[in-house]
Image (cartoon, rainbow, N blue to C red; front, side):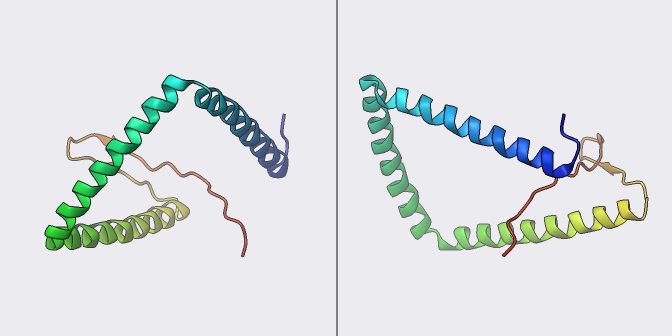
Length: 118
């Protein structure tokens, strides 16, 4: 059992490496199956056709594409601000009570993400 954050971090990294190794073995098995390869090639051709269609539609409708980009930027900004507000409230030991449009009570769940120092 891990007793320090470093030991637990090391165990998590080891498990990730094992998962990657198993996935790689499975993918190699897939790629050795002729039927799988043919099917995958067919899917790739269909995806290329779909992308050509979506690109054309987006070029023909730049106003909608720009509005969508603006909305996505706004959403990302609001999410950052929302997170900051919730963390600040919790640090002040204030209760955070939120309600969905269906009147369901929800509460924040925090997850730690690590980033390599630059």
